[in-house]
Length: 163
Image: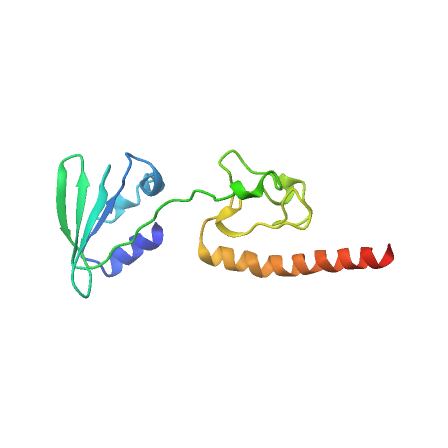
């Protein structure tokens, strides 16, 4: 959100944040006062984007909220849909936290920071418990995990050769 605030300060004539549920999600992260530091930024709770307007580019959105429909002229739209992990397919193959994210590292009893409770299974990015939920972080985690995964496979092959 700090990045969005900086963009608004630098380029946008105004910023309007719409939150589907009352005081949860994205806006909850802003409750530390950042929106109030950007005078052109307003928050509207319990609102949803109902329609997008424009032909070859975005010119506006229709919002539905507690007071009915509102039309907002805008040239940009950022949508954050939340983070619900899709980990049901793991079927107890790795330890999950109370929200369904994969537990890794020391909390999972693993030697590697990204290894799960099952040796040789790694979790990176948004699905990992405690991750920052950013693409750049997931890419960095992936670059670290690939060598750990290769080392794990090599160790398994060495073990098979000795047996």
